[in-house]
Image 1 (tube, rainbow, N blue to C red):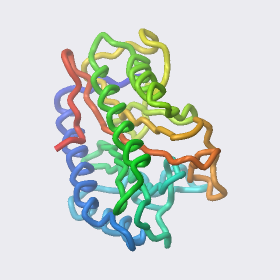
Image 2 (cartoon, one colour):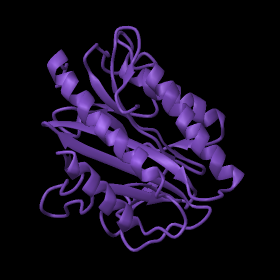
Image 3 (spheres, one colour):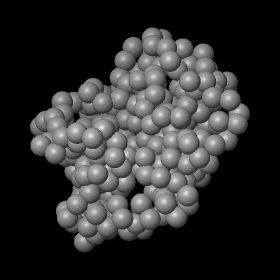
Image 4 (tube, one colour):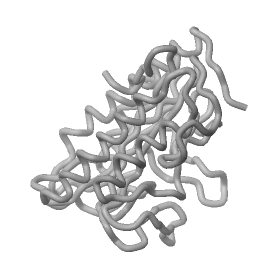
Length: 252
């Protein structure tokens, strides 16, 4: 079932999304060479809890292998779900930070790829084009369009630049749960998929590789890396589908 949220719910989702946006803005000044990724996770969790919210990812996945952290911190060839730990950021790295929180019973979800110090022109372009593909996807989150119009816009732009779109992982609905229907692929045929309606809330999140689109899971059961060890970038916004345009809830 795809949730259509009413004005009261949307107001609460908007508050949750503003907090997760503030968290990433707060973190940006700490993303630099020499910083331990566990340190980033600690200050993010403290920030979220100090605002009366709960980290959305921590404990996600059930008792068998629950996700252990507040953030997903994915470096270079890591696509998403990198677990914070002792690894230290180095000059030239690119690092995707994905963050979610629950405030007043509603979720916000947001991700951004940062350049650590001075990065190569190739990696800088990967970051810029991944962000641009998200913007194109967001422009399609309008009532009357179809879900795959979003992915088609992302895929067309990205493949024209010579990159690839990860196929095994997709965006999703979000609101009362972290992951809701519909799935929002970053690829697909325009004019297909579920009809977009005002009041739907989506997490749109292109995951773009400089090499091939195939990925694999590391032994920790969470970290997703590119199969060919090429660099990867990831951006994500939570958006409200509108009659005329999308409202980007995680942008302040």
